[in-house]
Length: 412
Image 1 (tube, helix red, strand yellow):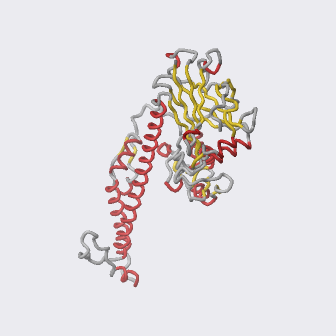
Image 2 (cartoon, helix red, strand yellow):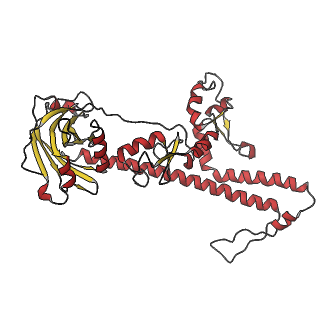
Image 3 (cartoon, one colour):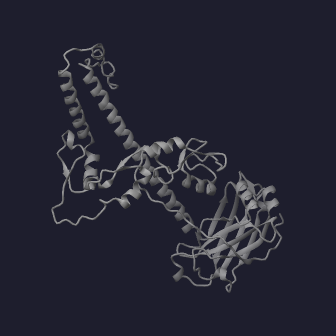
């Protein structure tokens, strides 16, 4: 590619807008029924060839934007790697959740996916207008011995989380009392019970030499197994919640790191376009398809820009490249129109001497450099024939399926 080839920068318009997706959680599902993207019950579940389950509406935009699985970064195709998961869909449909207004008298049990619509239409979902004192709700384990009562759902939830062992003890005692009554009514011990009496608890892992006395009857054996299963299930659920919380914290820290990177880059931004061959193919199939870089700033409180790369509408054999002004929270404090120097370098990753470098100065009367009135200015400034596509692909600018474009913007 000829580095000395001069190109005149001009203003260009983009017909596409920017949209964002936002979703909210309805109810906390079990991990096997939870979408790893929206942390909500799986809606129209699908399964990938790498074995992960997602909502169809969550994974398809993700793959369209990134081209890989969000959990293990395996490359995925929407046509051949995504399959409907009807088994999980049927399992979720048969799940039933109590209405949150159960304490007000609602006895409905609804599917998780119908939970939100039921709450909106529930006849018990009305504000309390009674002048009577607040009714205190008994603990969910009231039937097995817990005497605590609560004035709010938050207090009950905190009690249930903190007193798990006490509630397990209530369950075990109630179960033991019930079985004891049944055993007293049966005078004869059958063969199965005699066999159970010969069983022992597993030895203590901290003291392998120690052994425990044999269990007295089948009731004691079942009670012991029941207690261990309940405890293990509780621990498994607590660990799943901890993992989910840690994942959210990691995602938040990652987002904060990325935000600080573009905020404090001082107008020096390196745009790495990964999965470049697939994205190029999509642009070749649809000339309206365009690639946008993340937004970046000329200073922490300065101007905000992004870069657009697409097939040139004037010459399908070339790329077009433009920079766009973007609206920021400090636009009212800045001087308009923007005046500055914009340098663009497409990095040759095999021979740095062949890196293509171009510099252009802003033109103050163009709309592209006026104060933005929308999230992104529809008019960009740059080159309608920036580089020949064949030269970019064949002459060392793409390495490991990644194209690198370095942008430097300075105010003058």
